[in-house]
Amino acid sequence: MARRSPTFASSAFTRAYQRGLKALTKATLRSGTRIAGEVTRAAAKQLKPPRGPGDWLSGMAIGPGGARRYHLYRPPDLQSGERLPLLVMLHGCGQTGRDFAVSTRMNLLAARERFFVLYPEQDRLAHPQGCWNWYDRRSGKADAEAATLMAAVDQACMLYPVDRERVAVAGLSAGASMAALLATRYPVRFKALAMHSGVAPGAARSPATALGAMRGRHVPPMPATAVGKAMGAAAVFTTLPPLLVLHGDADAVVSASNAGSTAEVWGTATGAKRGAERTLQRGKRHAMRVTEFKRSGRTFVMLCEVAGLGHAWSGGAPRLPFSDAAGPNATRLIWAFAAKQFRAAATA
View 1 (cartoon, helix red, strand yellow):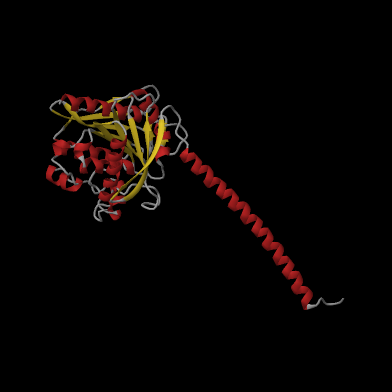
View 2: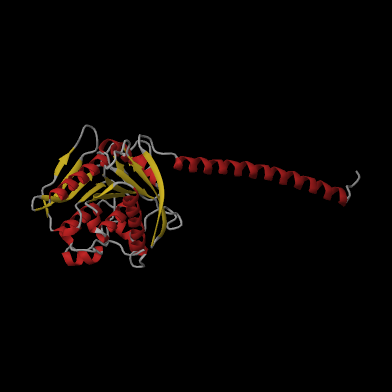
């Protein structure tokens, strides 16, 4: 049998190599097209307004922590001269402002009750998982980010007919902890605060202590002076806004012990005394243990511990991440709490 020449073997190898390269190129192009399509669809989804009437307005605020995008929900049929309350909603890790709006369905309630909703959005360059840097106070990063969020609030108040005397802030997880930081740094700017599945204020001051704080460690001491130092309050404690705490007792991400610690810390800081616990349940929804901390007959802390709820928005839209439709409706609870504080502040 005749032996093939080296030239022939080389030529066959070259053709095989070229065929392989061509196939690889086609596969790469197909994969690139698929990935590009997925990115385009994801971007289009984020630009699409959440369901419901009203306007979904985009903007950007610049502050000491850099630039942050935001969306503002404006209810329909705004009347000339009408000034509406504002609720600031801070999303959790792995979420966007739109994700948070869809999960909580806060816009649908805002359309009915008539209030603005501001959804600031964390930049992935500031945190790769989209978490707010609530814990990084030792380096100053947390306070710079809080100042940038306040720039977004100021911008909303300047551009839209917001009643500055009726502003509240709420958040989930990292958003809850950042909401608490905003309320302690700028207490006179907010009439109510709601923390859903967050870490106790003052429990972390650096990335190294944040994980322990999420597990329920590093709780600040109870004496008012020590609490104030840990929380970094910018004013006397009696100016802190009333607080609503929501937390699931089956939370495997942020220890449920943070809920009780948060309530105790805030109660101490505001001089409010703990009352008796009562259990509430509506239909087949998860039961909820409610404890109020009062001073001079007014509730300054309401602690709501939800049985069987994990790390998710209680009563949120079904089949979405970080959302549990079986829980009590946190969206309604938060707005009812905020509206009550608006009325109490106006009376006072």
